[in-house]
Image (cartoon, rainbow, N blue to C red; front, side, top):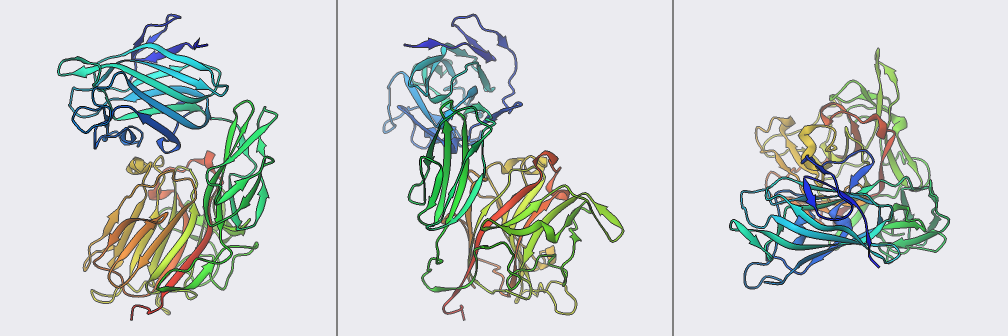
Length: 521
């Protein structure tokens, strides 16, 4: 049996019962406790799409790409009506809002004009979300606010009319984005991340929930499985998401990284540096816990802002990971008080490689005004302590394998929602002999575990995420040894720090550096 659920449409006219309010606004941002659901966590399909403008482009978070219904020979579902879009959620969602973003160029064809929308609840009941929906023929966002009390596992949208050459058509439809918004659940895991070794297990539990039973699942049972009691067991190296759902639909997740007992072999390379961060003490034979510019352990200040002190206490090993902590704590030294602390470790005078294959498993925090980073720097002079940048022929560089100033800390980084930065700085940042290298690849689901890697040879540097090559620099390749650094920066050029997100930890499960068996000589 279908049950009619009332909705309020913003900038939309809907003919259904009861009579609904019509609000005039085109804003489609997040509001209060409502958050957008990433398209990466959805499964979706349609019976109509144009080659090159597939449905995935309406869920990629990019307003400049678009889905287009079939309109030429070879397209999926050419001439098929009505146009249907099915969306499956990864777990039951308390859906509060839906936003349709039309195609954002000047093309007038395909604006969705008439549609309906149904949902399926956890019990399998089909409910009417929008009985007879109509949208204005323009390029502004169309917002549907949904008032209901049951979580949905899927939504079906049926499109019956779109704009076409100044008229209407039952086969014309397009969208830059379809975005669902859910009410944030207060449910949490006792741990939001785990780092396990193969064969190791750990029990999870859900907190702040009303339900009295929990269903557990793993996104990748080959990597980590979870029992009906919430015990997670590591099987093979990789990552997985463990989800707990109560009988009331409350949902929480834990991101898991599993490391093999032995590092995997790489053809043509041998392992020369490894730290899995087991135990509870940072290995001082491998790492320095202080500034790259100092020769002794002590607080120091980054040049980006005097209000942040990089402090040795903010880098530590716990539960199988290195933790670099961002915190709001006062530190007074050199006659000045800083109000924030961050953490950094580096390998100066302990491990300074030239070429090789590096990989590290990282989980970054979601806090505005912070910047997790994986990078290298040239060796420092033994007496002067200054960086040995070299000259046109023998030179080092700052190689930023990962930097991600949070997109909400500064308008300068707002475009990094699903991206991160790779940069090579040369010549003491003057770029006299060499050109700066910079790119901003996609980083889907940035706050999950990701494996960042770099293959550095005399001929090129490849930058790799989760075994996918993201960028290649095949000129101006640094050719002198470098220091390896992990850091979690705050404030200054990074942006306004969100105090409500602190304390926060950047986690590192492992670091591995392989050297070529031929050492590129």
